Picture (tube, rainbow, N blue to C red):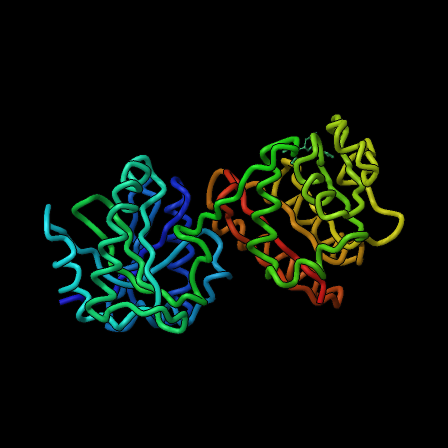
Length: 352
Ligand SMILES: C[S@@+](CC[C@H](N)C(=O)[O-])C[C@H]1O[C@@H](n2cnc3c(N)ncnc32)[C@H](O)[C@@H]1O
């Protein structure tokens, strides 16, 4: 009998411990009994609940967008599959699941996962057909999403998640195209941050032509390129050289200065910062910019410490929140490890 009492949590390989720490804390706060487990570099963790309904209670008590390390989540069970007749076995197991509103086939972000993605693409067509025919799948975004995460051709996690409270992209990985004119690959980090933190329908208002921005640690200009691409005027602060093509846009002023000391003459709409620095120093910088009203919105990368990475990020976010509250500044604070992030997380802040 399926228990549907485990949560499968996808993550960047190497961050399984952070996911376990994050979920241990949330489960404790929400009074959901269970334990987190993971194998290093497996690109996933599991939270196994000990009471019926625990996994669903955890998901309902949390906003997926508010989580830091998990890229995707689903409640369900691992199912072993035979070598042939896989669809028959899946249909049998799904008889205990509700009718679903969409179907995603996923793999883990590992080398084995990459090898499995061709199998998934081929398998999806007959599976979808069979599910529709059996009445297990309808095209309805209000119904839960059926997420099948294949660990191998013989083992799959049969999971459920609400479409409006789970990742916006399969495996939580946005497929962004590298813009050829951008001077560095880092450019995708800022683009992904916008997709993650700003609803698409608000882009024209909050990333509007004629707005002003400061890019701290801007060289060679991948993040500045994204801002310029939206016709935003940028002060690019870095001692290093900016790509000449960006300077030709007429929208960029290059200031050779220390990003931790630089302050704009007038408040700007956006501050973005990609300087590799101790996270506590970067957190203090964020607090100053938001707290003193130097910018309205900010995207800032926080490099992660070597140890206690989840605890340290939580501590810094709390410190920023307390600092802003002490100044009487109301702001939304979000933080996530994006797909394009490595040993870092990305914070988004907005004055309210
Ligand atoms: C990761 S790179 C930024 C890449 C950039 N976001 C892009 O997309 O091309 C970090 C940059 O921070 C700059 N940097 C380091 N310390 C700095 C500081 N104190 N003030 C300003 N820039 C700094 C470095 O010169 C380097 O160009």
